[in-house]
Image 1: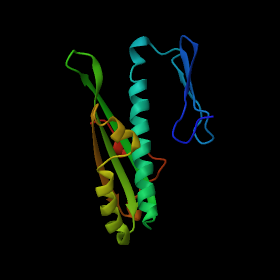
Image 2: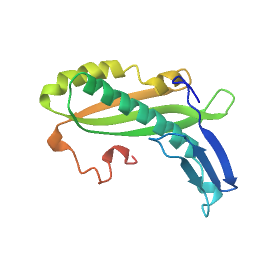
Image 3: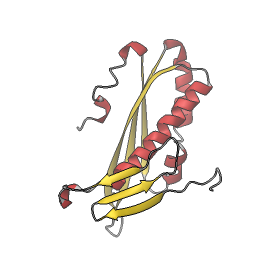
Image 4: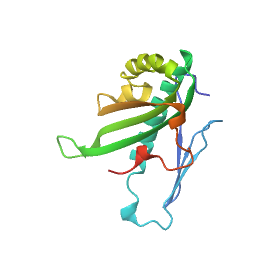
Length: 162
């Protein structure tokens, strides 16, 4: 059993087209990547999406915790991560940068708490500051009023392609 300072994730190649990450977590289900029927040229980007998702979740959850610990009521918190690949000095493909965009809905009275938390969050979260020597991570936090929150079932404008 891992202690609280470590986690373990198991990888399983189930077939040439099916891969699984076993999370062994009550809150996080296993991840199954199934390329069955997907052409080879459309399979790229999975690892980059997993990395971006990890940074996004860590940042958003840390921001939420910082806000609620200081007494703010978070009506809604949504985010999007955009990861960009580039080349290093010997032309290997690598992660060049990740941009995190967050929309958080708070009452007017909680805006000063958000401003304090924005300053704290400029340092990032566990995952992003652990990777900061490898690539740049940008953070953008936008406050919404509760009445501005869009239907959570609708497609987010945060993650629309430019």
